[in-house]
Length: 129
Image 1 (tube, rainbow, N blue to C red):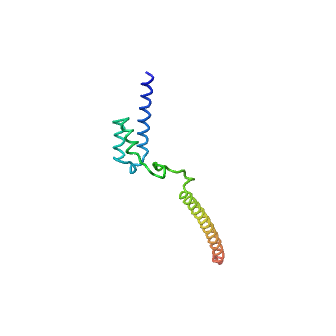
Image 2 (cartoon, rainbow, N blue to C red):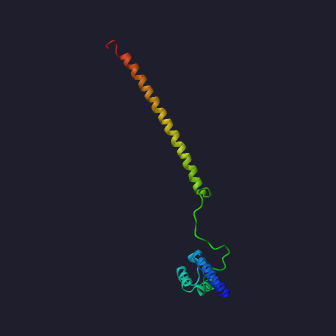
Image 3 (cartoon, rainbow, N blue to C red):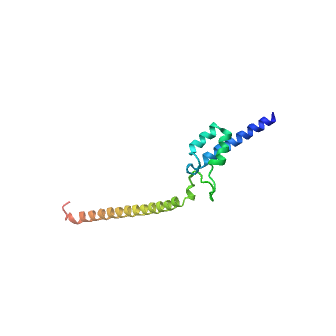
């Protein structure tokens, strides 16, 4: 009884390990047949498929670790994001500075127009009011 349980656990471990290894391997690195075909072989023939994958299909001789699927990096780890963030901050600060300057100039122009009209009205009446 204990032997059967141990055998079932070993079969399950080999099957899961082989299937996960196939799934995590990049498709272009598989040997023999395509990645989807290896997954089907693993599911149809659990033990034999795992053994065949480990002996035949798994990539070998790569000096680098197996490449995994690209995953998103945190924004503070991405130099392009940080560079763009700083450029956006500078652009926003410049836009705010220009808007404030424009508002100041418009207010000054209104003030000057208001003074000029009052001053002209007083001088142009010549007592005709």
